[in-house]
Every structure is written in structure tokens, then in C-alpha cells.
Length: 212
Image 1 (cartoon, helix red, strand yellow):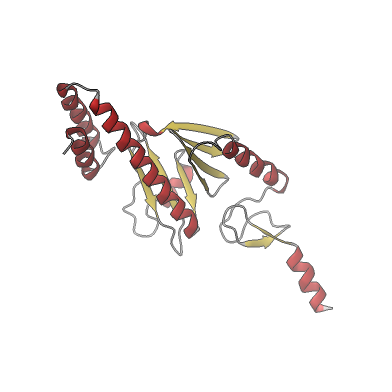
Image 2: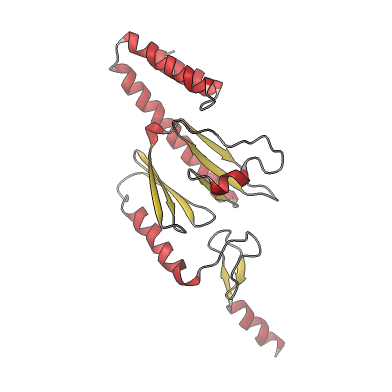
């Protein structure tokens, strides 16, 4: 009798779409990550993400499924941030992304990836415990995650964006007059002074422009 009850209980367990852990089919919130379970729209939302991914089947593509029904799809020259909870999609040209901020998930807090664009600022990561994770929850350009494999995908996204922007800067630099390179360095210096990019990022991009 008890064995049958246990088997029936296992059948009722489903996987949380946010953290991937087993939860009761009747649960309204995941006890592990507090994700709100929406049984009726779960399959619909998954189909939406797959449809978006399939539309880029001929391009190099990276897909990061995060918490709170948010995901990022990176293909060719854009990053799409899809918020299934709000039924919203945002497209960021990769050339407009100044930097990528990543935090690895820990035991007590989740990780995140943030795409820092013009006029945007990185999340404050000075907090020893959260490292900016709480701010990432409400940030439009951030994706939260809790799994190590999601963190690895985030690193691949960062590498792709860096390589893409490096190629773009080199291509643009080849077609520019020498005095326009100085203008670009001045713009980069301004971004560094405003805290949008770091000193290391400024030095790296300056070397690219000067072909050092």
C-alpha cells in the first residue's frame, strides 16, 4: 500500500521550469527558487522560446533559459531578451553592448548575466553575499540562473559578444582615417569615466583601434 502511494506521489512530481528541481504538480510556487508555477502557460511559453530559436536555425545561436521565465537568444548580430512572464521581447544589437557582466551562482544566491549598453551601468557587485543578484531580478537587460550549465552558457555568450565586437572594431578601423581613430579613443575614455566600461576594457579597445 505504502509503495503504491510513493509511486503515485512520484508521478505527481514535475520539473520546475526555472531551477529544474522536482516539485509537486499542485505547487503554486517552487519551494527551491520561489518561481511561480503557471501550469496552463508553461507548455505555451516553452513553444514560444523554441519558435524564436528555430527562426535562427541557419545562424550561430546560443540560448540561455533563466529564472522568472526570462531567456536570452544570441544569434548573428543581436541578443534577444525574452520575458515570457510579461510577454515581451527586447532586441539588443551586439555592437551596442559595451560589456557583459556575469556572476556565478552560489549556494545561497543565484547567478546572472547582464548586457551593459550605452548609458547603462553594471550591477553593483560589491555586496559579498548577493554580488548584485538581487538587482538583476528587476533589471531588463539581465538574466538570472541557478545551474552551473547555465553559467557555462553565459560564459559562451560573453566570449561570442567579445569576439564579435572585436571583429567589428577591426573592420571599422580599417576603413577609418587616422584622425577618426583618435575620436573613437576619446569616446571610449568618456565611457570609462562614466563607469560604463572598465579601465581594462578601455585599454583593450584602444589597442584594437591602434592595431597594437
